[in-house]
Length: 326
Ligand code: SF4
Ligand code: SF4
Ligand code: FES
Figure (cartoon, rainbow, N blue to C red):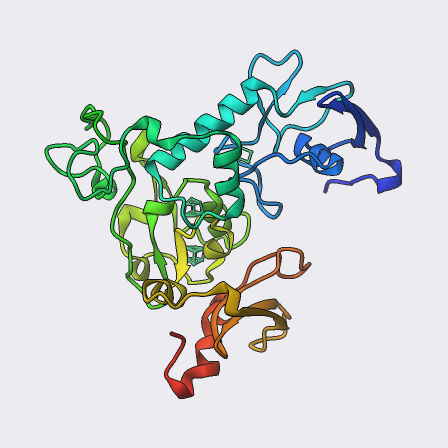
């Protein structure tokens, strides 16, 4: 059993951020220290309820004496550390991350912060080639088959040189194999959050993992089988943590497709799940007097953003009398 010292006994660690002195508790990360100081550090794969996996590298900062840039989301502070969050080296690295993602992934639903960072860091995804759609057969195809649509069947080592005409893309058809949620991996930035939520950080179901290597790496069920045949229990905790809209309620997906999704007309009501005695908190997103999706607050002691299938998708019964959720 690990004993944690009471806050009052924990050692204070002094450091500087962009030349300004700051003191934080021992065990804090550079990201914690920056937040305390009001310095924004962009993050994509970090979430406070998940174990840091350090895969997106957009949070990197410069630390005096360190040969390489370090990920602020997981690197613990040390006494006397000198951190630069906005040096040219840091900005170049973050710009490159945004450009590589923006050139190959559909980031249109990735949130206002991501769009703002693309602009603020001067990222120009178009530098990497014309935006490929995934339907045109020239985006790094293997044997004439479009790479973006063949990732699930890609074989290790089978790579063709990209034509250079269009940027490589992860574009592929939306996976719709169950009534609850869709998987649109053309929006996936491989942040691993869904894998963590499905695994040891929440659900311990391990229905999904990262398969493949390099550009062919993708989130997959075992042997890329459909969700109903996999270990998935439809808790939807992966949807709750996905930052890009790659995982989405069928209700939201279909409303977007019909041009009906309108967050300005939606209200969010926090309530308690009625299905059992655990007391999970729900956030009901309601549009036109209909529940369109159910999320869960990250800051709730019991729930920490997670639900089971009943809390996440059982809302359909509440409006079953007039035809279901969407
Ligand atoms: S719905 Fe739950 S069990 Fe299914 S893949 Fe997502 S996190 Fe895993
Ligand atoms: S599906 Fe979403 S949560 Fe999962 S790796 Fe892709 S972007 Fe991240
Ligand atoms: S947010 Fe730190 S590596 Fe992704």
